[in-house]
Image (cartoon, rainbow, N blue to C red; front, side, top):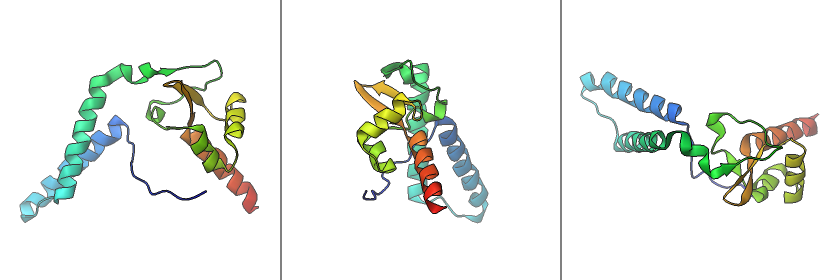
Length: 138
């Protein structure tokens, strides 16, 4: 398995709003000193605010493109976007994609069908990988 650079970070709407409020509070705190926020922080704030508006506009329709199965496990709202395909899950776990599907059928990994393809819970995949790593260290 080769390491890949992180190119995205996913936040739920509440976390994005919190970061925007923290940036605003910091801007208010430094204003009396004559300092200003850096351009990258201003861009980050604007991007988070735009994303928050898009998510809030979608509202309850976020899950409309995801179909359920009889074996799926309930997931929290924050995990709506935390899914990976079988090849990615297999790479994280160090097993074959068939092994990922087997674990999903047995309820070890939450799965959904999205866009005609099965996707698997990143949180469950990482949990299983961490458990395996702990067992190997013993």
